Amino acid sequence: MALVDFEPGEHPRGGGPQFETALRLLAQDAAAAFETLRRQPDIDSFRVGFFGASQVGWIIPLAAEQVDTKPRFHILISGPAISTGVEAFYSQLTGDGARRPERTDETEIMRRVEEFIGPVGYDPLPLLKAQNVPTLWLLGERDESVPTSATKRALEAIRAQGNNSHTDINYLDADHDLRQVSTHAVRKIASISLLTWKLIIRRELREVVITDHFDFVSVFALKAPQRLKA
Image (cartoon, rainbow, N blue to C red; front, side, top):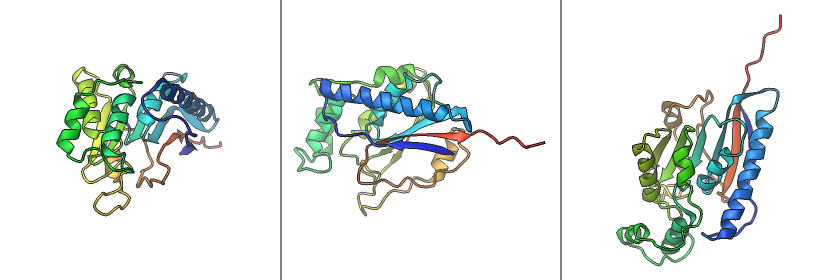
């Protein structure tokens, strides 16, 4: 297995046009990394995919539109399938897991999110509906940065329209970093979750260790089988 890993640089946050511009630039970087890895002589160019966390729910669908060969898979940790405007509003209400929250009642927070009428910003849903790349979403039910319930509803709507390429696995006691809220320990992502999901990945991903800087995008691929010498 081969891996290209990079972290996004500093860029504006929120739901405004500057943030969308930054996302599109990051998507260009991700697409370039994908193509660089795909063209390596020892890589099976048809088994290359994206893997990342947090903002990748916005970045990877954009990147997938810019590559010459369709990615074989996506794996998204705590990625949003909702607009940047909705995510920013939700983070404002919850404190984003780092500030004093404006609201603490989960029912009230989600009611406000569902009734949100502010600037939408960039919305990944049209691309997610149009693309049919097998995609695994790993989501924490107690995420205070991305509204997991809203992301799940978006994915359910996609499946209801006949696009069954999206699978979500939910961790009940996990936050945005997939740390267990009750213990603050890194949540182990069991390899069985990936193996039962029908990705053609031969090596187990036994555990994803989340660092303090959670925004990252990786491209990884399976190497081509080595030919036996005569």
